[in-house]
Image 1 (tube, rainbow, N blue to C red):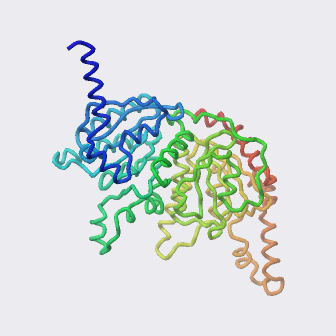
Image 2 (image 1 turned 120 degrees about the vertical axis):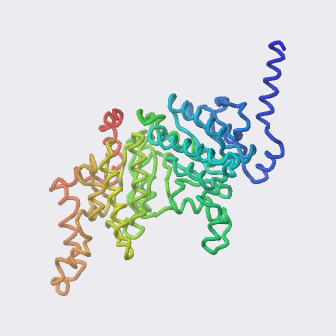
Image 3 (image 1 turned 135 degrees about the vertical axis):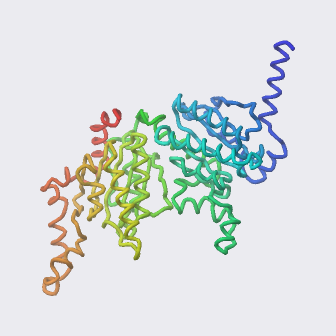
Length: 472
């Protein structure tokens, strides 16, 4: 067989591999899902994808590398049209080779789990396969950005693909992710809830498993590209600086709510909210401010005065830890009346979660900027704006910094004056004794600023500390 014949054979085999099993492909499309190769091709820049180990067809996964907005990315997509995408020894070998290549080359890793489970005919060996893949992902987390697109099933051990990712994106109506099948959950709990409702995108978002949700696969891949743009290729380098919108732009005050404030501070169109459906008393974002990629934590005073329960503390800790792992500055917009009083028995959990949040800030060596826009009561000041928790702490003239809310301060220290002088006057007195100017006089904040110039001050702070961020 001469070269021309060999090249013809290569072309035919490549074509057959790309086409797959027509019946299985039709079943995948009938379920409303893209095939693994379609997902990959829609994610990467046109013509940039190089598939690895393409002739290992029985492995049931597509692996390879390409570019997303001209930046390197490695993709691992289970192929539900081949053995249901089941984990196997062959799939493990293919995945580990790709992950090893990613570690050597550097770049975000995109995981696309879509599997009916494991190839049980391999016995305990398939459990070892899961363990080896997950151990590799766990070691890579914090070194290379891991992003999971959940558009199929990931039941049992496969659910760890979602949990090991830095950012998981769940597609509504398509994904089902859980440690047990819905049938087992319903049997134990005595319920009869459909699997996608029990373990689908909305449930995953409400429980803090999925950072983002998408209405369809096309939108999920757009979100992947946005997240990749906001993270570095590896933990050892910075995210490329882009040209921001008007660096001197003033923000609107008062903002409609905390989300509007964060959007106004960020560069236009750059804000990506993570865990938006999970505990809205705090909101967490990736964004660009003045072209600098960063994390933004925003207390939500419209939600119970911005009080933070254990879940909200965990949510904030996740964002701050992500920023620490990938060398991103953190901006915190503080307007919180402190920790929420938990239901009886929840005190220990609240203390644990609050300590986890505090530790995330204390151990963050990237630039930390805080703006106190309203209340910074008790733990809100300690965790977000105190010395060693913020490199730069600014305050609006409306800020109030104290161990107790003004209402609690009056009740605790001025109860004997309430009847004669009235509570409103005493609460105003308490506010003035602990306002932004009093805090600045004591060195508790670095400056009191005009609220409309908040974005300008934050960009100046990011520029000032940029060399520190780039050296980590």
